[in-house]
Length: 226
Image (tube, rainbow, N blue to C red; front, side, top):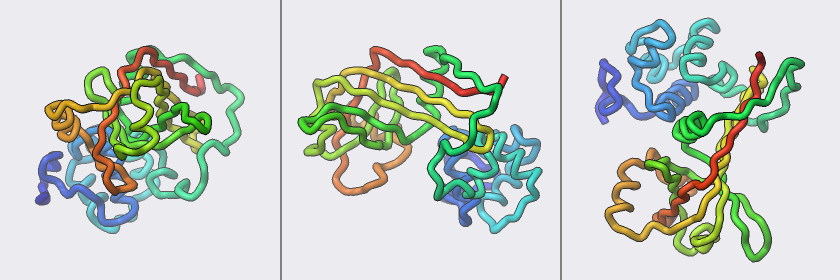
């Protein structure tokens, strides 16, 4: 792809050149936002967002905070301060509450992420696998190996879960979808999924077998501070 001063999603540089830049790009693309949209959210312009993504920038904490807020994340996440630490170590706030999300909120949050977890029953007992996924219409789809445990689970009930945990603000949410797993065999359906998939499976290898879940139940919860 060629670089674009306008920051349009179709022509801009797809990855940042520093750790900060890469995290900004990854989060922005995860949300499906252009540089102009991020800039508008944080009171800057697309050129400034492009500079942060493509150069070894050292923005002030205020600028970082505004960028993080525009991307729905934290300064710690953008700067990599939480990279080596498992989430959830923060102490709960005294006024924290757990609220139930609506079906619409759950479906929206499902569409904002690209990595989730699939839970299945196997001959050795329950198992959970992380997967790169995409939401296509009302279905959740992911790729795996044709011989993998997940592929052999076709025809059984699966649970799919995705979440976001922020230790800095001590807030987070989780969404779970349950439905029957099916292998995608129609060539046209596979092509449509290939076209909308945002990334290839991280482990690489021959993971070209599409699976889908048509949820019969979606539930979600969020930890908030009133």
